Image (cartoon, rainbow, N blue to C red; front, side, top):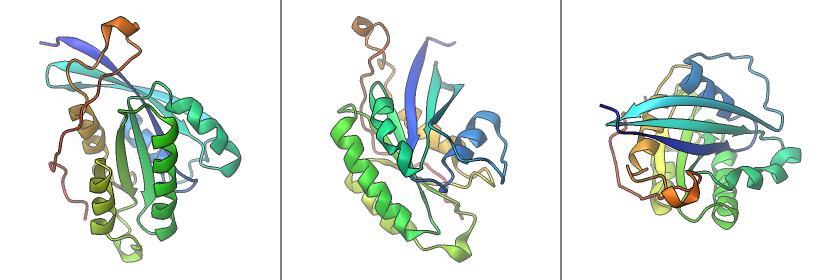
Length: 196
């Protein structure tokens, strides 16, 4: 029996080319387009999933990665319960850029936002530049969800969003805030499946 519906506003950020939009499309539409166009500004999608006795409705802002749109990102931080920051496991510089996004999110985002780090393209193990352990150690140091994903092969996409759901308590909606506020908690979890 479903007890409640929790709206989980979230955003997905990083520079262009790491597969942000592909992750969102795989999660929402369960499809992959190798020729997907870069996001201009931001795109918006929703998906409702059941987590225990609740429905979590994900309201996802997929922000553009191009530098000229970076100034728009803080507008999407406000009111977000979670943020997914994506890096490409085949490009070391994307992990370094991710750390800058985390700093910006900590400065301008809600204080208790759930941060998730996704190492995308884990199907390309032969071209790996970022060791999984290094990225996981960094994620652990900032109390973030960590998952390696492949939007192309549908690896760990649903697990990523399920882990975000686990970190949002059943009392997530703050009734005094017209369902716009979220009370968040952090829980350690190591239930993801190994990528490759």
